[in-house]
Image 1 (cartoon, rainbow, N blue to C red):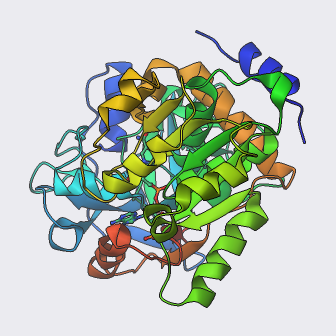
Image 2: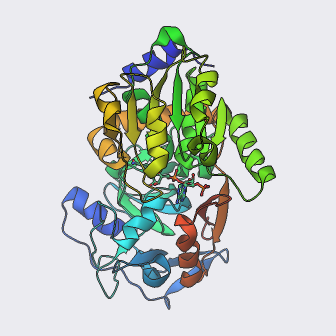
Image 3: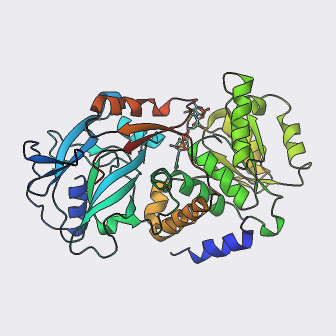
Length: 423
Ligand SMILES: NC(=O)c1ccc[n+]([C@@H]2O[C@H](COP(=O)([O-])OP(=O)(O)OC[C@H]3O[C@@H](n4cnc5c(N)ncnc54)[C@H](OP(=O)(O)O)[C@@H]3O)[C@@H](O)[C@H]2O)c1
């Protein structure tokens, strides 16, 4: 385990203050190149898998939407082509891209950030590409590209650029290179930039931990089996912070027990169900977990809202913090006034997209830290429901797999893995 002082030193030292085509043009400010050819008649299959036209265009497909609605109703697969990269442009092939709850909210039109709709991919209507994170492999680079080469793995610096696409063309400046991909999988790289970064920053930035009291202070969180929750459990374990984790009970006691055990195996100190938390006696349970209150619960991470969030807040020690980052129950957060007046609790919200845009260097360092933990086997993969995206996959099937993302009690996060065109 890293000592708290080591973690603090590492973190403080790192604390520095279309479509693909369109995005890269926007970044360079150059005039648009001729529209890409979208005809499939001039394409040649290479090794039966990758399709490159005789003019050097890479054939690509993207899951796009041109109006808001349910993913199954508004997502469609659009075929287009991408020119050979020039200047600082980089051509990419998708490895893995997850389907996160926010991606669906974005498609539904209920998320605060909305990617611009445009026709740069040659869609009949202005459209945006779905997805906000993923791992890509560099397949070719323009002559001006300095820090990337063929075979490198990259992730997009910012969210909102569209990752549910077989190929993309971006400017080098829009990409983060994975410095050492040895010991990492596309899944680990493709899911590092949203959930683990969110957990990491909430734990680090919203509580003044007493580093002399390692193992004597607590985080409480709901949605503990979510991607963010699992990351928080493991980071707490690494940093010597105990975690009290709340999950929703499963259909049978055995399944509930199995879920609790899964989280304990990740490093959770205690796991309780929402039902256990909301019935009488939870206060006494907390008293016991925290050695009669001698080990304060100093930070609550709220993914759910509603009564669940109120119950989390009530366990906090005076002068502690609750950070809300999700609203899975769609219920508002209601707080007894006494928590504000007499306990002096602080309530904040955290949004990784905005934070990352303001702190690009720190985001990159946070990603590096998590990937280092991953490489060393101390940060485990999330459970996934893999959706293989072959070149000839049907758009309706891909859209259907996105549709289930907001459903509860899932066995794993939906993840697209592109298996075509891996020259
Ligand atoms: N603010 C930010 O910067 C930020 C960053 C990342 C994620 N998020 C948000 O964090 C939340 C979790 O994201 P994720 O990708 O980690 O999720 P995920 O891995 O897809 O897991 C979803 C979680 O939500 C729970 N859940 C689903 N429906 C629920 C309901 N009706 N009531 C209570 N819990 C429910 C699930 O519990 P069950 O297994 O019991 O269904 C599971 O724990 C989402 O709201 C997401 O938008 C926010």
